[in-house]
Length: 309
Length: 250
Ligand SMILES: Cc1cc2nc3c(=O)[nH]c(=O)nc-3n(C[C@H](O)[C@H](O)[C@H](O)COP(=O)(O)OP(=O)(O)OC[C@H]3O[C@@H](n4cnc5c(N)ncnc54)[C@H](O)[C@@H]3O)c2cc1C
Image 1: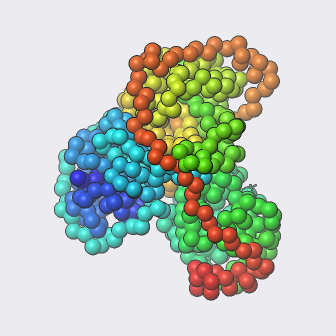
Image 2: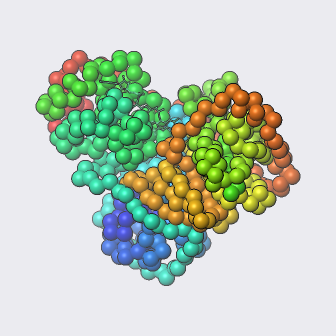
C-alpha cells in the first residue's frame, strides 16, 4: 500500500514540516510518494528526492499552483489520488486549507491533526484544546489525514534517492485569485521548528517591550512567540500566536513571560520539553505546567536574565 | 445579498473538559454549552455586512439535536433574521454536516456563507472547506478581514507566515478567524425579539442525507501529565537549573 504525502514549500525551499509528515506516513504505509506542486519549483522537487523513505516524487509545475489556492490544489490531488491508500499533509495553514476539500471531493472523512498512528485505520488526535486525546478509527477506504508535526520526529532530508516523475496536470478552477502575501521577514528560526521559544503575553504591555525578549532570543537562538492577547492588542503580528488556534509548538525550552496560561494557550505549548514561566502572579495557571517558575516582575527579571545567560 | 451562517453548539470555552472515568467519551454532564466562539464571530460579520447595507438577509443554520435551538436563538438575538435547525440525534461529523448544509444552500441560494474556521470541541477545522468542495465554490479560510463588492469578496487570511489576501468569486465560503471582529453582546430587547423570529426545523431524514459517522471513537483519554515543577527564587537559580539540571541552555 502506498501513501501520498503533500509537501509543504514556498516554490524555492522545501519546509521541514514535510519531513515530520513523511515520518507519520511511514507508520501507515510501506511505500511513500511525495507530491511537489507549485510553480517554478524544480529545486524543491530535487530536494524532495533525497528525503528518507520516499520512493517517488510527483512533480507538477504550473502557474495555477503558485500560491497553493485550495480550489486548484484539491482538484490536482483528487485527480492523482487513485492508487493511494492514504493521503497526508502537515497541519499547517496550507494543509488545513486544502485537505478537507480533497476529502470531500473523494467523499471520505478527514482525520485532522493526528498525534499518533496506532494502526492502519486507528489514530490519536487531541480534542478540546488538547484537554483530551481521542483514539479514533476511520471506516473509509482512503485515509485523508493532516499531521501534527510536533508529534512525529522528522526523517532525514538527505539519505533518500527517489525517482522524479514530472506530471502534466492543469487544474485551474478559475474562481479564486491570489492578490498578495504580507509575510514576516525574520532572521530568527521558525516558531514551529525552533529549539527554544520565548513568548510574551499581555503582561508585556506593548510592542516595544518585546525588545526585552529580543535580547534573550538573540543569545539563545530562540524564536519569539506570543499569546492571543498580545496579538489582539497589536503588540506583535498574528503569525506569533501560539495556541489552540495559533501555532502548535514543542521546543526543548519554552519560556512564557507575562502569560497567564489559559487552556487555549497551553494547547499550543504544553508538549514542550522544558517550560519556564515568569509571571508576577503566583496563582497564574501557567505555573501548573511550568518546570521552573519564577514569580517576579518581568521588567526586572528579563534584563537580569539577559545579562546572566 | 443573502448570507447563510452555519453555527455549532459546543462546550463553553472556559470549561476544562475531561474524559469519562471509563474513557468511552468526553464527560459533558452538566457542563455549560454555548455557541462556538468562531461561529459567533461569523454571525457578527454577517450582521455588520447587513448594517453596512451590503446584505439584506441573514439565515443562521445548525445541524444537531433539538437543544441546539438555544444557539440558533442566540444567533437571532445577535441579528440573524431567521434560523434553520436540521435535526438529528446522531452526533454529526463534518462531511455529513457539509452534505446537509449543501442541500439547504441549494434551496436558499445564499450569495455568501460565513462560518467559523473550527469548532472548539473536535478542533477539526474541516466543515467550511468540505462544503465549498461539495458546492464547487471558492473558499477563503481563516479570514481576518472581509470586503464584499461586485460579486466578489476580497479576504485577508491569517496564514503561518503572516497574512495573505485573495479574491474569490461569489457565491463563496468564508471561514472566520479570531481577529475578523469582536462580537457584540446581545441586548435584552434583542433577546426578546429573537423569540419571535422564525425558526424552521427539518428532520435530517427528510433531507435524505447520509449522516452516518465515518469515524468512530475508540476511546478518550487524558493527555500525558506533566511532572510537577518547582518555583525558583531568583534568576541566578533559574539560569543554573536550565544549564545544569535541564541542560537546555549552555
Ligand atoms: C476560541 C478561542 C481561541 C483562543 N485561542 C488562543 C490561542 O491560540 N492562543 C492564545 O494564547 N490564546 C487563545 N485564546 C485566548 C485565551 O483564552 C486567553 O485570553 C489568552 O491566552 C490570554 O493571554 P495572556 O495570558 O497574554 O493574557 P492574560 O490572561 O491577561 O495574562 C497576562 C498575565 O501577565 C501577567 N503580568 C502582567 N504584568 C506583569 C509583569 N509586569 N510581570 C510579570 N507578569 C505580569 C499577569 O499576572 C497575567 O498572568 C483563545 C480564546 C478563545 C475563546
